[in-house]
Length: 272
Image 1: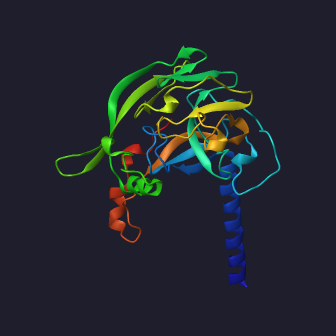
Image 2: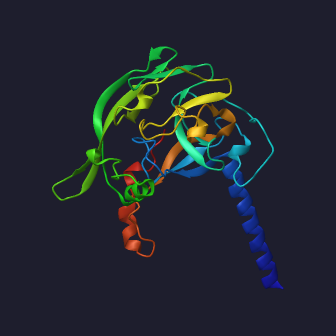
Image 3: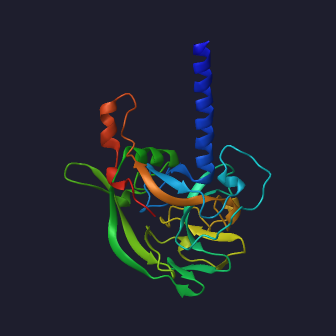
């Protein structure tokens, strides 16, 4: 009888714990990991983030493992320019993406020779030191999945040191939005997306871009072309809050001695 009571108490504890975790994921924070290079240099493949759920209010997209016939948001708030946001991708149902907010409802956004113009005014951009990062196993795996010529996207960005270690070197720039928010971006080469028509952001929508401007399918691309298009604010899941873990992908599950060397400790705790 005592054993049965203890089992019942233990199962009750597990149910309460699961409910608590679920409520935390709905109301407070949820995890997100970076699978691609679209947000370099701020985010690398293998970074793990906590996403704050409360800043923009709550929609059905913010509730994990649930399908609700609910439109709109509770306690809605508009993001600020420069916020890094996680959202359900309009082009891929059930898949979450991460980008940076550039344009708000009513804004006019245009790119001219790679420079972002907001409402007819150029966003200041200056060249800074290159981004130099080592080639990691998770970068190699991602390149293989994308059938890329190199983990650095092309051989032209790949280098080796005297010991034969491989590195990626990318041209980096610093942008500053009208609200004073500054961040670094990569502009790898001249592309069709460096020049655009004027995008007008409709009410209830956002214009978002990846920091790696030549590796991101964002608001510059229509949904039918695999992009984001104008992002409905109802699709927002939350705002990137802090990095809580980062790995190179070199750890082997059954070889614990490989675990410490795979951790990029210097990236843990970085905010946004």
